[in-house]
Every structure is written in structure tokens, then in C-alpha cells.
Length: 263
Image (cartoon, rainbow, N blue to C red; front, side, top):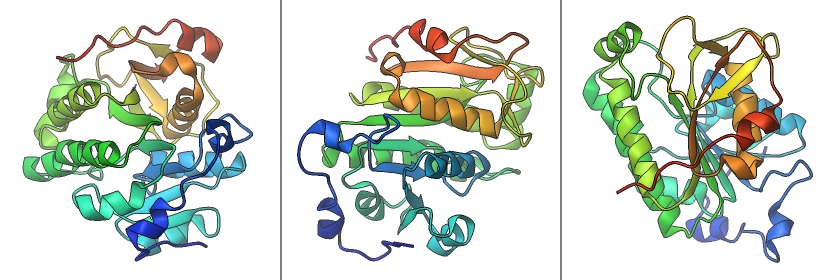
């Protein structure tokens, strides 16, 4: 494995691909290098494995590189980084052509100070680092249902997990103000079931957080990678859940409306 922990920032910056923009696009239409944050979480692992299956070698950013090495073996490049540490984060994402952010506080009860530090301040740190690096690719941010619409499930989650949806909403707002190309994917209630068992709905109706609005991590990973390369997904926010009926992904992406400019 080509681990990059401790490599000077100048060397990683030199990893930028020279030549025309098309030289940075892989055979599956994905810009490269693809940097994945939160890769050792459930959805992050599915994203990385899908990238590897597509012949894309992602750069995985992890607080504990040995953890990522144990999970992914030789399929990835690993660099130490943490969204709460801007200097280290700068080294980790330098030269990225695309960034996928699935970072979040791990499941379980959490204090609001930790939630804010990771899920909001960490996002702001990432945006600043990408701006400073001259990032021109797309940032794919994984959020959740319930950031803008109240429900009993959303209220319970906020009480249990330090107002996580409040800070996710503020992170979304910061992304929209950043000037970067982005896609915000609000996932339904996540399950560990294998993907591909149920039709998927992509919608901008702002669904309530509810057990009826579920989706597997594998299916979210598929939508994230499709959105990363789809022109119509730029500067949009949408929900993704299982649905009784199916529709082609292209048709659902083409119906997306860009977000209103942030003030």
C-alpha cells in the first residue's frame, strides 16, 4: 500500500496531474484523484470498495492510518488527516480532483461540543483548505434527512446525539456559500442491508426523517458516485431513500434544480 503519512505537503502537491483536464478523468468518468474522508465508516467503506472495483485508486484520509490499511489492504493510498486539524487536512487533500466527505461522529450518544467540532467546524475547515488549495473539482457531502424538516425521529436524534441535524444543516449552508461545485446528498435512515434490493428515489421534496424513509449504505454509496460525475448534480441538494417504484438514475438527476444562491 502506498501510505502517505508524514509525506511533506510539497510532495503531495506535486501529485497533481499535469496536462489537460481530461487527463484527470478515469475510464468510468470520475475525476482523479478522488479523496475520501470518513472512509472507515459504513458508507465510506462501500464507496471505497466501489471505487476499487471501478479501477479507481482513491486516496483515503483517516485519523488512524493503520485502521484504513487493515480494512482496505492494497486497494487505496492512505494519508493521515483529520477535519479538526487544518494543517494535516491541507496535506491530505492537496491536489484532489474530487472530494467525498462522509465524516461524522460515530453512532451512539455524543455531546454537542464534539458534534459541532466534527460535523460543522470540520466541514468549514475542509472548505477553507480546498479554497486555499485552488480546488476546482466537486465536493460530495453526505448529510441526512431531517436537517430542514421537523419530525419526531429528527427531534429524538438531536436529543440523543448533540443536535447533529442542526449542525449538519449549518454545514450544508456553509457549503452552499463556499463558491465550490458541490452535491449534498441527504440520506434516509441507514441500514446495513446489501444494495440493489429495492428501487431508489432521488428527490428534492425534503422528506421527513422516519423509519419509512430508509436506504442501505451500499445504495447511498452508489448514488454518491453517480452524482460525483453527473453534470446535472452540480450545486444541488437532494434526498435519497428506498421507494416502491423504480426510475432511471439519469432521469432523476436531470430533474434536479440547482440550489438557490446562498446569501
